[in-house]
Every structure is written in C-alpha cells, then in structure tokens.
Image (cartoon, rainbow, N blue to C red):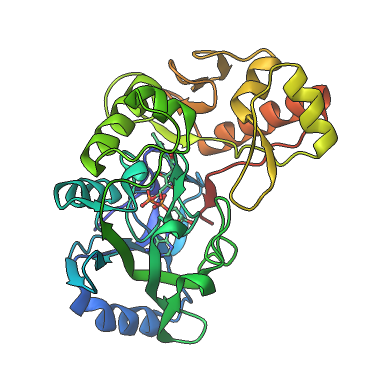
Length: 342
Ligand SMILES: Cc1cc2nc3c(=O)[nH]c(=O)nc-3n(C[C@H](O)[C@H](O)[C@H](O)COP(=O)(O)OP(=O)(O)OC[C@H]3O[C@@H](n4cnc5c(N)ncnc54)[C@H](O)[C@@H]3O)c2cc1C
C-alpha cells in the first residue's frame, strides 16, 4: 500500500499520510508481519478495519498502520442448538450477520447493518437495537504487542461494557485476530427494543425468525439514516459522533420530563439521548456546524465531512457541540469515534 493516507482508510475520508501501511489478507502472514514491524523498531502498529469509527489526524501517522482484511469463517456444532462460529478479524460484520441469517443462527441479528469489521466490533462492544457483541462473543484471539505473543481471551476478560472494552482503553496494545461467537439454531433473541418491535409489527418479547429480524433491522436503519451509503451528501461519516451520556437519576427525571428519551443500558447506567440533547440546543439534520462539517441530512447525531473538511475542524465542531450542550443542560457529551494518528 504505497502513498497511503489515513483519509483513504477511513469512512470520514479525513487524515494525513501514513509512513507504512500493511494489509493483512492471509492469517498465515501474521508471523512475518510481526517480524517486519519488530525489525523497524517502531513499536506497536495502529490497527484498522474499515475506519468507520475513527477521526484520523490531519498530520497522519508516523508508524505502521495494519489494515485487517482476513476473511475466513468456520463453524463447529457444539450441541443440538449451539454452533461455535470463528471469524477472522477483517471480515465485514455485515457479511457475518447475513451469513448467520441464511444459516438460521441467532445471537447477532440486531447487529445487521453496522459498518466495519468483526475484529473491531469488540473494541467498543458494538451494539444496536438491544443487542451487542458481548451477548454472543465466547472468546477471541489477539496479538498482545506489549507481551509480544498471541493471547486467547475469554469474553469476560475483554471487559465488554456499554460501547467500551479493555481494547478501547489500551490503544495500540492489541490486534484482534479472530472472534468466536456462540450462536443458536433458534428463533431470534426476544425483541427488547420498541422501534424494532414496531418495525416488525410484534409485541416486545416476541421471537420472529432470524431472517425477519435481520431484514427489519436493515429496513429501520435505512429509514433512520443509519446505513453507510458511500454516495450522496452523508457519505463521509463515522456514525454517531457522541455516546448517549450517562446521567444521574435527578438529571434523568428532569430531562425526561422535558421530553428527552432516557434508557438504562446493559450496565444498568441511565443514559440520555445525545441526539435529543443536540436538538434541544438548536441543531437539526442538515445544520452547518463549520466549513465542511454538517449534521447529516437524516440525523442530527451524525456529523458528515464535506468539501473543505479537515480533521482538526471536525474535532473543533465536536467540541463546540458538546460545550453548547453542557452549558445548557450540565450534561457532558463524549465522542464515540476514536481519535487516531500522530
Ligand atoms: C453509518 C454508521 C453507523 C454505525 N452504527 C453503529 C451502531 O449501530 N453501533 C455501533 O456500535 N457502532 C456503529 N458504528 C460505528 C462502527 O461501525 C463500529 O464501531 C465498528 O465496529 C467499527 O469497525 P471498523 O472496522 O470500521 O473499525 P475502525 O474504525 O477501523 O477502528 C475502530 C477502533 O478499533 C480499533 N481496531 C480496529 N480493528 C481492530 C482489530 N482487529 N484489533 C484491535 N483493534 C482494532 C482501531 O484502532 C480503532 O481504535 C457506525 C458507523 C457508521 C459509519
């Protein structure tokens, strides 16, 4: 990968030059890649999948960037209903969810349509529509750059929390190589998310087929502007720019009385809707925040990069939005994408 830039590796298409970029397509090449990086004596590389959850520095990256493009998938029956599915890190998560739907395997159907790779999904415990990676992950293998060896981590050791994990908090230490999920040959997991129940026309707790839930999730994401469309004004984006912020019981009562959706996450933490808070302080779909930085046409919580955008301008826009929300509501917004680069 000559003359690579972070812009060419990320969905926001922002970010400067990269000193070295290595694309890994064959798992058997891993040992040689580790030797190459050791020879360069430059420390751990920056690992990327599809770059759909990062804001990459305009200055680029001085070290090596490793782009995971390994694709393999193997399935092993454990008992009458459970199948262990091991997936290489570079496989698109969307491929995995559509394969599981075809195989009638439940456990990850609500994750359909989330951009990016399987290896990145545990990094922020990717989730949507009431389901997250931690619901189905059994274990993963990862290269530990600190210890210089391959590690097998049971899901519990990954410290998967709401959009968080031990990997997100230790940038550069880990490269996830494979993830193994335990999926079940059964109807989909019970529907727990109201908009999904409405999309399916079922009650909460219903268990439609995996294929029905997968299709409903994709349709709902399409309508809400949650799919990554490489064309059009919202093509350059990294999804939601802020996490739904944790709030105290007092803040939850006050802001939900004002109309703000508040939910309890899987860690039993109350969270307010970041999108509602942005709209409360005046932003709307399509709002211009700065030169080249707009709210997406369909969704205030997604910011898009357009002509003239820079990574510095994009992060300044995030700071402006969160400062305005904090000044008006006292609630602190934190960016969801990871800031990367030099
Ligand atoms: C339109 C849109 C919708 C989205 N919707 C959702 C959603 O519903 N739910 C959700 O959770 N997320 C969502 N996201 C965010 C994003 O898709 C996920 O976080 C996804 O898991 C990122 O995958 P990636 O391969 O693009 O990771 P990248 O952006 O390449 O990397 C993200 C982080 O993970 C690290 N990383 C990447 N691969 C590896 C690896 N193999 N080993 C170790 N570290 C690695 C990177 O260094 C970086 O810190 C959305 C994004 C977009 C653009």
